[in-house]
Image: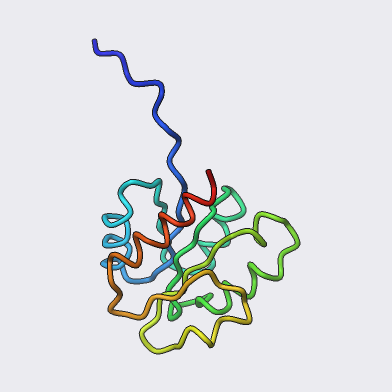
Length: 130
């Protein structure tokens, strides 16, 4: 039996909230170097953020139930430091980045987004977490 490599570096956790399964699969594939968890809406994202610490969240804006903007408001209104430190990247086809600056977002991706931008956001957060 081969010995497993015990020196594997712990992978950064990333949360993706998007109601479209195809987008969740795409982001998971693009971010394959990281520990990616996906959820279909803002309510599930909040539950996941309560259970685990994530340095980075990619969130769609238009989702059923708790939409992206409501999710961001909920996160920013929490007093726990982990929520204040959370870097949020907004994904939208109909909004502008300026619409969300009041929530101290980390980044903005306009649909259809460039895969290299997704990789860049994740890499920058990863490097700042080291």
